[in-house]
Amino acid sequence: MEPGSQQDAFIEQFLRSQDRIYAYVVTLLPNRDDAEEVFQQTSLALWKKWQEFDATRDFVRWACGMAHLEVCTFLRKHAGRTRVNLNEDVLLEVAEARLQLHDVLEERRKALLECLGRLQRQSRELLERCYAGKDSIKQIAEDLGLRPNALYMTLKRLRRKLFDCISVRIAAEQGQ
Figure (tube, rainbow, N blue to C red):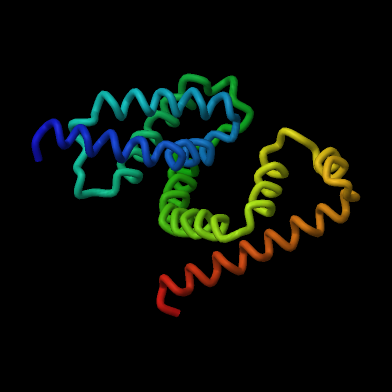
């Protein structure tokens, strides 16, 4: 592969995978500030090593391997400051479990996006508003002229509808 096209492939994969790499880091470092710092370090490390990227392999696994090294470095540097200190064996087990779930989570994420697209615009906007975290359920219910319990029931029905849709999509993809 030519250097330019290899770099283009790296950039495309990196941009598509940032959220998943960040989620991986958050799995290992639940403190958001720490996770953000390590994600930035990981991003820098990936950009520095883009030429080592092999387009025939799983980019997310490669990037998460780099993230794992950055997490270990971070934990060693900040050993006295973190609230929870996991030894490297436990950290490795958690990291491996997260990577094993990568494909399942990605499949479910794609199904969720497709199922959200099938909802009526009003339902989709309601879900987005409720889960954006900007307004309380009480405030949203008040704006809609509903009681909070009625809004909770509406959200419960929408979540069930999404769950069923995702289950059907995944079963169909697996040929069940």
